[in-house]
Amino acid sequence: MSPHEPSIIQSRDNPLLLRLRKLSRNPGAYRKAGELWLEGEHLCAALRERGRPALQAVVSESAWQQAPRRQLAQWAPRIALVPDALFESFSALPSAGQIGFVLTLPVAPAIQPVAPTVVLDRVQDAGNVGSILRTAAAFGIAQVLALQGTAALWSPKVLRAGMGAHFGLDLIEGLKPADLGALAIPWVGTSLDTPQCLHRTRLPQPCAWLMGHEGQGLAPELLARCAHVVRIPQPGGEESLNVAAAAAICLYEGLRQKNA
Image (cartoon, rainbow, N blue to C red):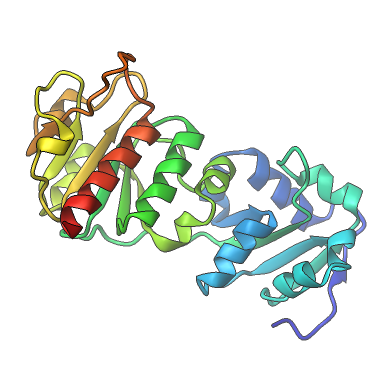
């Protein structure tokens, strides 16, 4: 808990607020800065619940008057208090979150060879990536590996879509296909051009699920290396499922078979 009163910021040109504008508006700014901006009560609470440290809390004046948000802000060792209008000037949300944490960008761990895994191959939509992370955390996946061309895992939009799932996963991004050689578990991919139905396939436990580009699917060289390539039945006749929806179905089926 922070034992001291917050510092008060009144200037738009304060160095902290200049950093926050970059972090909130540039999807890849965290890589150069080495820090993240979590905006909104839900993400901040998720960080605290996981016991992850924050460097700095930034709170609007109105939020500071609310006991739950004031207590949440006190998770950080330093607190900056800003007028509501000034908070809106660096917020990336349609309605400013009124509270946020600055934290150090987590160091990417080494690939775990036998951990349940999701691999993202050029999944470009931030909402899809965040949704897959959330599903992966819910179904007991340990790590998510993102190949080059995938949306930045720690970008503000992916963080918001993940709704705190980031803090329950090992995340490694910027990988090349050759890096996946570190995995010592079977790969499972999806395709519309296979007769092998998901629910009729005995899935390996553990495995690495490969999820591909929204329009192009998995790269052919990755598909060729999969131990199983499965199809999700679609009797309604739609051309394809959204990749985040497909991931949810596949991960659920894997968990169902594991617990059967």
